[in-house]
Length: 190
Image (cartoon, rainbow, N blue to C red):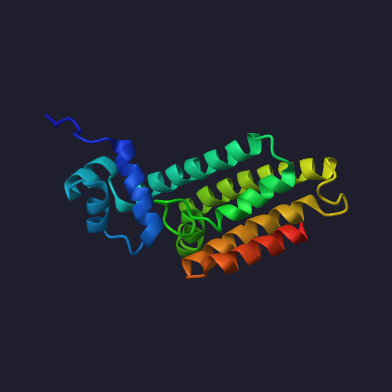
């Protein structure tokens, strides 16, 4: 008879998410995951089958976390340009306890070229974010905050690319001043 689980699976996925976010997929060993989650190797493999499956669950959790933040921002009463500014500043200000950079961006660079499942998951998330940005930009155009002549789709891609680039720059050691300058320049271009 199998023993009942003695741990919180959601908490383990959250801890694994932070480990992968900090170290990347390849560099995060099973031992790192054991230390992060507080689980033994057998508990990890009995519950998640493989490192890849645990990573997939961690990536989904990350997307839920970041998607929730985006949803809250979009639902707020702030004007469109202020919402875009807050999005850009998310790449400037790393919340306490969060690793530097972006797990989705890191995974797109590290895994997507050779892992079709991860690539598809990231593509669906990116498309959702782009659609949300297009709606936000269209609202800004209607309210006169963003010039009507600017192409909505292009601006949405520009904001996403800027945020991704800022995450890579931060991960590479760019300081806050540099990140603020990038965000300010991007906002001026919108």
